[in-house]
Length: 245
Ligand code: NDP
Image (cartoon, rainbow, N blue to C red; front, top):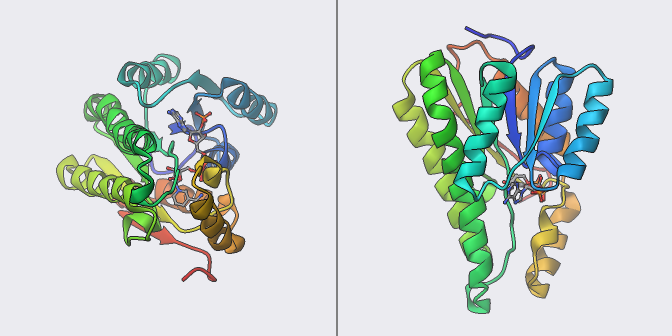
């Protein structure tokens, strides 16, 4: 069993910015072997170059997590290159907040596709491999919005509640060989609010994000979950800015 981070094969979705990028940087510093996934391959390559020049072993795989076949190909590429998959971090997500009355149904679809289905496709792709290895760790990015509702955020909250259900369901079914961790951050300074198209929702998010903390705070929480001995499963970490309600 693997008890530390060095040499672990870690797949990170949404690694082209924000929490995913910060996590890649932190885990590279701990000697993890990284597989970076997102749609913007140019950004992944720049990050990979940076990490490789520091001595890290990195694979870049352009992936749209809403496409089940691409997620399968991502996990297969990780296995082909490194021979195993120790950790999957289902981090890709978007947050186009708007009140239900704005009827941004296309954005609801996108949130369901990326935030929920992307996570499910990731779990489906790694589960058989982790069963075969008799070890593995799935880390899902939920949110404080997966614990409480915010007006104007019903669909986003629904997706993050769903992520929590998937994390806990996996934990209950996984047995003693696979770990499941749910990470629920509050406001963190990333590009997440850039997906908001509703002007009022954007203004209130900008207000809340005035107290946002650095993405490395979440990377440290993820690092903590991974570095535990294999018989310790950190089920959930909730973290938020001290100044957030
Ligand atoms: P960013 O917008 O900075 O990063 C989002 C990442 O998701 C990008 O790398 C983006 O890459 C990727 N992504 C989006 N759509 C897809 C897709 N279809 N396929 C593959 N990758 C995709 O936001 P954060 O870093 O903040 O968000 C990361 C996660 O953390 C999200 O799940 C978010 O909900 C969650 N979270 C964030 C909080 C915050 O305050 N920042 C608080 C609580 C939770 P690309 O566009 O290149 O595909």
